[in-house]
Length: 159
Image (cartoon, rainbow, N blue to C red; front, side, top):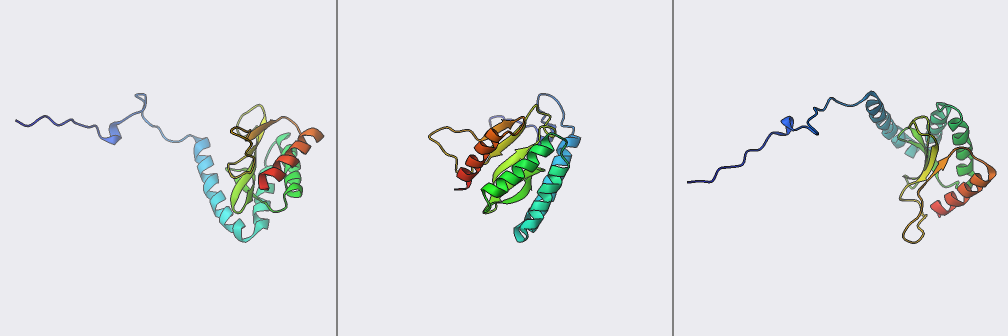
């Protein structure tokens, strides 16, 4: 006699938490579409850095206040602090890349329905400090003290 084979359900009948998948939300579809457009723009920007800057400026212009004011000021600070990196959009938000890889980015509080905006760094940023270091910072407003910290962090990140 042969042992009974275990039967498997097909992947189509599998559900998560007994709920059927109903598709992506409008926000998820918009994010995917924006990312696809960014990839096309990124390829264009590799040939023309001015194209990346115009994409970033358009993303900033679309932000509501106070995020717009902070993003404009960050853009100026980053360009002055690290002239070797170039602007591009990353998931619809302003970002700054070196050798084609994002080093730092700004996330609007409004887009992510958060109580604060975020200024962050990717793993390509040279911020390593021991076994643990911060990679993103909450921003409610930019004062001279925050601007000085950002200048120092950006310079270190691209060093």
